[in-house]
Image (cartoon, rainbow, N blue to C red; front, side):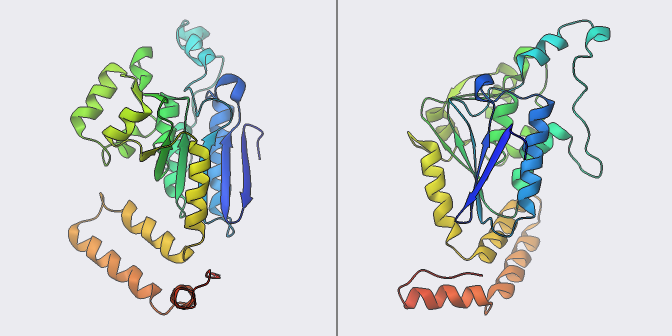
Length: 266
């Protein structure tokens, strides 16, 4: 695992941290690759039942590294400091988009612990988790318009289920800065906490003690809401409940409840 992103797994919870605190976890190609690699590695781990995504130090992620913007401002012929973000073979995403989207692809819940800054690309990565716990004083912005760019890391996919199109357009067109309090009011963050990481780890621990098969199936159902017809949503519910009823973990959940003990899921 790259030192740019650290992963520690304990009790079924993966504690994933962007680890470039001296740069406020700013993004360059090495950082993009480390984030994607961390997410892809977690997909193959059977011991992970929930994930917490946060930034080491005082910020979640301040967006693209300033050196990249300075290169963009130079003549095109001179702008060779870093190759463009790669398109990933066989995927619908390029590398930057996958840094945000990989958290939706994970079958287990992902909780974002957001504080300090979540700007530009950092904002878009923060939209990748299923749940976001945010510090009230966090500063968030879709900041790409400042640099004459459009957001290209998945915000057009992740944001519409959360907020109205008019609100989204205002954020896109102006680069408006919002606080953690405003983020919760707008619907782009789930709830406030003065210690987002601690709260996220506590929630992840709670989820990790639920039937893992049921949790994975719940995420699958909910993630398909905007893509499925009404009939397909009903069918998905039937499919997943039929697979769960009478399964070993489902029986263990019922048995543990009536025996007033913690369940032992496989």
